[in-house]
Image (tube, rainbow, N blue to C red; front, side):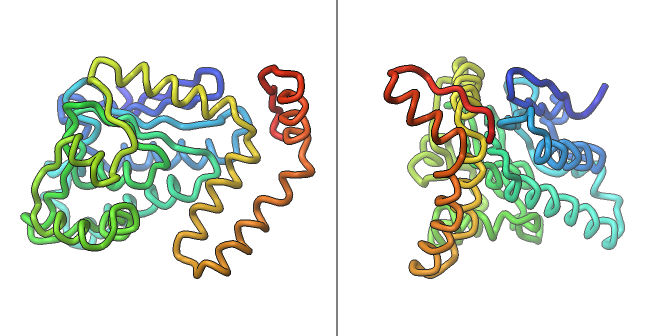
Amino acid sequence: MSEVLVNRDEGVLWLTLNRPEALNALTNACLDLLTEQIHQAATDSQTLVVVLKGQGPKAFCSGIDLAERGPMSAQDKGRQSRRVVDLVRAIHCSPKPVVASIGGWCLGAGLELALACDVRLAAELARFGFPEMKLGAYPGGGGAVLLQRIVGPAQAMEWLLSGRHLTSAEALAMGLVSRVTPSADLAAVTAETAKVIASLAPLAVAALKESMRITASLPIAEALEADQALRRPLDATLDYAEGLRAHREKRSAVFIGA
C-alpha cells in the first residue's frame, strides 16, 4: 500500500497521506513521493490545483515519524530535514495553488507542509502544534520561517516557545487557517474550494501566487513594480478576453490557459 494516495478529478490532484495507523506521520519514502508529485504537478497542464490531506479523521499529519528518525545518525537526521525543506519549497514555489485540508492533528513537519500551502482549511476538531522545542530543537523544515510571515513574529515566537496545541478556533483567530468547518463538512468544503480554484484562468492564478510570494518581503515601491510586471501580461491573454466577453454575455467563462 502506497504511503501517498494519488487521485485526479477534473483538474484537481488529490494527494492523501496514507498512514492512518501512524497518524499519517512522514517517512523518507513519503516525503520523496510527495515532492515528486508536487514537481510533476507544476508542469502538468491538466493539473489546476493540488489538495493535500490525511487519511482518516484523526490526523492531517502528526509530523516526522519518530520511530524511523530516532535511530538515525545526526547526518541522516540532517538529510531528512533537508527532504522536508525541499518539499516545503516545492509547495511554496509551485505555480499551482495547493490547498491543505486539515482534519485532526497537524503537528511538526505536518504543520510545516500546511504552512507552505496557499489555502488552509480546517475541521473544528483539528489541533495544531510544534512540539520540537520540547524535544530539544525547533521546527527545522521551514516552520519558524513561514509561521512568522503568516501570523507575525510576536505570535509566532510565543507559540513556538510554548509548545502548546492550538484549537481550530485559535488557529482561525491567529490567521493560521482561512476557514473552519464542522468536521463532517471538511471533505465537501475542500472539494468545492478546489473546484472554484480549478475554474479560474490558470495563467492568472499562477501570476497571483507568484506575486504574493515574491512581494511579501519587498519594500512597497519595489513590490508594486514587481506586481505590475506579473499582472500586465495577463491583459493580452485569450483568457482575459474570454473573461470580459463572458461578463458582457452574462455567462460563466471557459478558460483555456492561454
